[in-house]
Length: 179
Ligand SMILES: [Zn+2]
Image 1 (cartoon, rainbow, N blue to C red):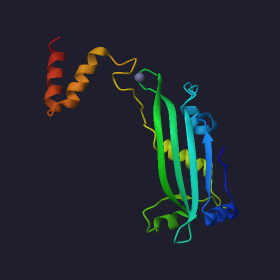
Image 2: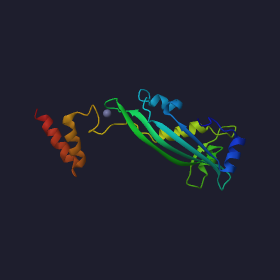
Image 3: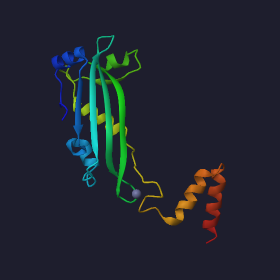
Image 4: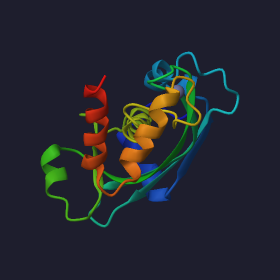
C-alpha cells in the first residue's frame, strides 16, 4: 500500500531523486472508496494501480504526478446492481505550502496543499483524485440495466436522437394527455 503520509524531509528527498512510488491496490484498501464500492467489491477484477512520481518544479515546489489505472464496481442508481467503471487518472499537482502560494502559480498545474508541517498526505491526495473522476450517478445504459423500463427505451432514444428534442417532448406530452 502507498505511504499514508510523506514528511517534509522525505518529500524533498524523493522529489530531488524524481522517485516513483507504485502500489497495486484493491478498492477495499481505501477508506472512502471502500464505502462507495460496498456490496460490489467482491469482483476479483476490481483494482487500482497507482504510480506517484515526485519531482522538483522550476519554482522550487515539489511536483506530484498522480497516475491511477484500474476498475471500480459502483452501484447503478437505477437497478442497484454493480456497474464497472474504468479509472484513468493522470494529473500533475504542484505541492504548495499555502493557499496564497497556489493562487500565485503561473504554471498550469493544479495544486495540492501541504500539511502544516510541510508534509504530504499522499494517500489522501490519490484518493481525492480518484473520487473526483467518478460519475455522480452511475447508470448502466438501457440495453444492460436490469431496471430499464422496456417501454421507456424507445422514448428516451427518440428524444436524444432527434434534431428537434422539444418536438419529440411535445408528442410525448400530447400522448399522455389523451389517456
Ligand atoms: Zn442498472
